[in-house]
Length: 220
Image 1 (cartoon, helix red, strand yellow):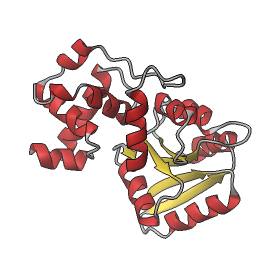
Image 2 (spheres, one colour):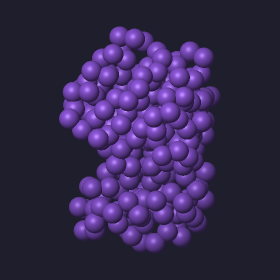
Image 3 (cartoon, helix red, strand yellow):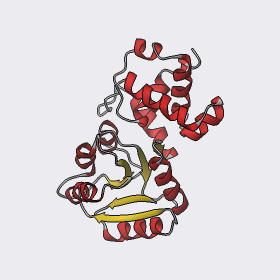
Image 4 (spheres, helix red, strand yellow):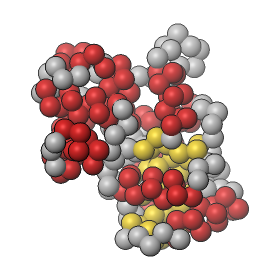
């Protein structure tokens, strides 16, 4: 079973999310939270696989909560609106595993939780386009901070690691990477972990941004 904490301050929205997730045979909602402080406490108490985290909540927002949970075994899946703002980029810097829109369909929400629980990243397509656009515009007044990776660090990756990095940039899961490159899913996951370590990145999402900016390095 995939154990999930749902953190959302709006009762109606939270109840809807819980109902959707509990309808899946392999997902169990182990706790609910109405603000960031409750979310952190619930995660520490129940040690779930995934926390579904709204960004804008009272007392402590989702970004501060995600930052506190960085380095734990719990993956943070952020809920946002279509209008991206500094909250989303704060979540990215805090090491969030993925971003979803609040109007996500039920089946897509369930699959996103499953993907993140496996250790893969998940970004809603609409969010991906906006993220890449914002990171590609450093001259904008509120442009987010890019992941700081020196070109030589990417060049020092092995040929296979650069292939995997390119796949991450395309939004492929470990399973899809394995299928494309003819390797096992475990090997793909190992390559992803090594890439994050070598490039000093905190999440797969950050790796995707780096991959987009170094797309010419595919295959060496």
